[in-house]
Image: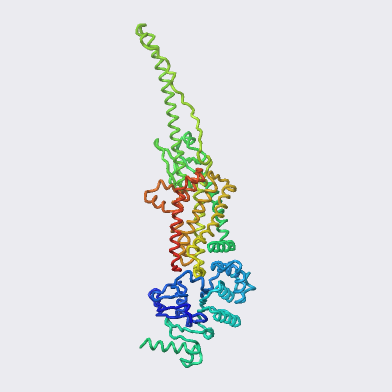
Length: 245
Length: 389
């Protein structure tokens, strides 16, 4: 499989506090990679280093063969941050259009892309409303729609399913699955085990360390348990022991 | 293209925020009107003074429309009277000396009294001088008459050698000089407001644009939309230019409203070209904008942004021409030259009051452009904080 994102030996500290310890990961085309861990584990910091918003103290990130940070590569990345990051006084459609234009979506495809991405998150009916009148879930969905607007080859989604109802969650996962099949690469972070089960490949993160990785099935087998939560707990313990040794 | 997209978005956001819109377009008019009326009434200051034992002729000469005289019938303490009756001054004559005591709470009134008393003294002296001259003239005539008398009594041989003295005819009569005054700029009734208008105009544009642009970029950062913006292939410079052009247009509209208001509602004359006024205000707004954007990098909240006002905006008022910079100490003048508003206000004053053409204000205008350039570059560097490329 072709590696889309490679993170090698990345260390990162803030105010002398070590946030990431020697993080290595590879995200490939046709694959959904899940970063799973409790809040504060360093998931968002990994995402920021991948996007080039932060520069690693040590190690490097390459995307599509380009060392990050790189402005041109951003054209091929759809990014959804943990915060909704929307313009409240604009309507949903205006938000989508704004980002579409920044990505240079052609005029004749503009409306088509807006309708399509809004459709993925069931927002077509609400595009004319101002975002200030949106509910939390609607904002989350609009934010996801924006990350899809330029038809990116790589999707980087930080906690995309927070505040989204189960039915729509299913629909979004089906859509992501379809993109992966089409050859896109997807990186998502989550702290929900149900989401983790949907991923092709999982990285479990705890206090800035990657404690284990593998597909959900192989992980359950490896640790000889029947759910991912148990895997996380067991892997965390063995990691602690190896640290102490 | 991306610049235009950002500009358009700023525009839409701005026009949907009615409060901010009112602040930008109505608040300056409100403040200007208020100042207009305040400075108008300032010209009719009347100082109350108490007098004791001052001759009524002197009192009459002191009296003018800016003075109101209260004669005291008994010898009272000047200080006490001023304190009790809130007079601006007290004049008292003792042993041939005129003693003036000022309240000096309002230096304006002190000045009026000082001037009036001095004028009165000069007038009295001239009168006395005139009276003395008349007397000496009469004396001279008498002496001449006596001289003639003596001459007649002298033998003819001597008297022939003495030139015939005639009465000095060339003794000049005091000519009544008429005063005609011309005003190169403005009119005789130009109020303080007219003089200060260019400064206020520059300040309003600077202040409001500085505040609003800075806060808007701050909001963009705090709502994380800046992160999202920087996750697109947009260049950092495109964001800066987008902001500059978006708020630049807002600044043009604001200036146009203020200028038209001053001309048509307040009836202020703008001697130079309105277009040059607009151009200078626009350039000034651009500097305010780039300064606001840059400063917002160092503020974590709107409140912290407001904290920059006393540091960055208020000092500029003092160097904008309210106090003549040429009279300042050397080091203060140096400070004035690093204040954008100093150049803006001076250019505006030249155009509005002295009918300067654009070419005449090119030096100030270029200085403003240098500030603009410096802050644009600083902004680009500042943006590196959020994305390295």
